[in-house]
Length: 203
Image (cartoon, rainbow, N blue to C red; front, side):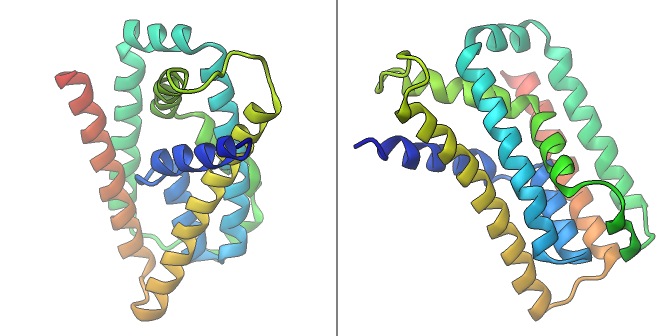
């Protein structure tokens, strides 16, 4: 029964991590330009970042929810950044050089891309509000809760690893050029921006 929380953590994270996000795109790009081992480092960093967001949402759920409700400009800013990043990838036609893998930490990149993501924080607030209706999550940091956060880490890493494996399989059947990959990433980012803007307008 205690491992139920581990499974719930994995499933809840997988649902939130399946839609293309910044860390997913970074994994795709790194897998194409380097290899899946390097992109997995991003996955580990993103997994730690996801656990941190889940911890913040668990500890200060109502505060976080009120903040984003009262400060809609934060969500608008996220939408704007996604749109700008998308346009950059579409316009930029230069192929990335493999030497670029020497710079920066993949772990830190994954962590940063995961943490700087307000919609995910809101998602975890909603998840915990739903879980509190079915499970006792207010008994401090018990073993069950610790297992839940382990599940969060595993869920994030597994989804990002699946993204990397999928890209590897696509590359084997139909190799992608650097330019076409940039265009695809740009379209995904702009689509996310449109979705984020629609949420602000409609809800």
